[in-house]
Image 1 (tube, one colour):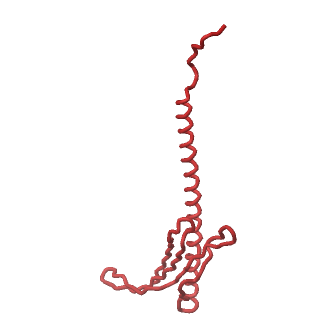
Image 2 (cartoon, helix red, strand yellow):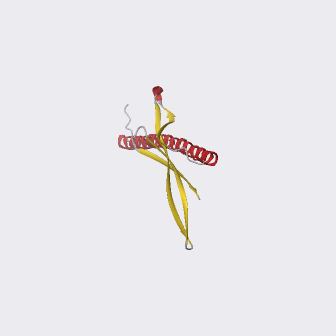
Image 3 (tube, helix red, strand yellow):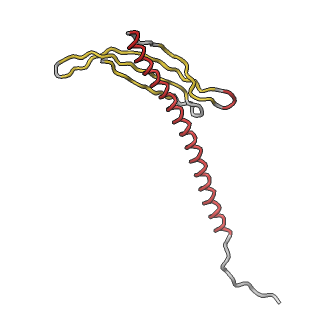
Length: 139
């Protein structure tokens, strides 16, 4: 004998496809978030290394000025920011420069020297130009 099935408690194909689409969108969103976070982590690492180079150079310039009465200025000194895949390196360019200026405080003109160390590099992947500037004022 053949019995008719009256049980309608199953899941339809349309519901299954809707759930699959929602799960696919969620997985793709998580994947994109992970990729973005990884790139941001790498960019922050490069910023930190460049900042350490620049602040170390500021310390050296202060030492040099104290002992030799002048700055040890230079332009476009190469610095290694990261070791990339396949033996490649991310290389930046560091420059130390001074500027003479003055400040007016309560009618008195105070001259001072600005020492700036700039590290510039091109971020791999998105090819954006990045720059870190560290400044020290000498009165």
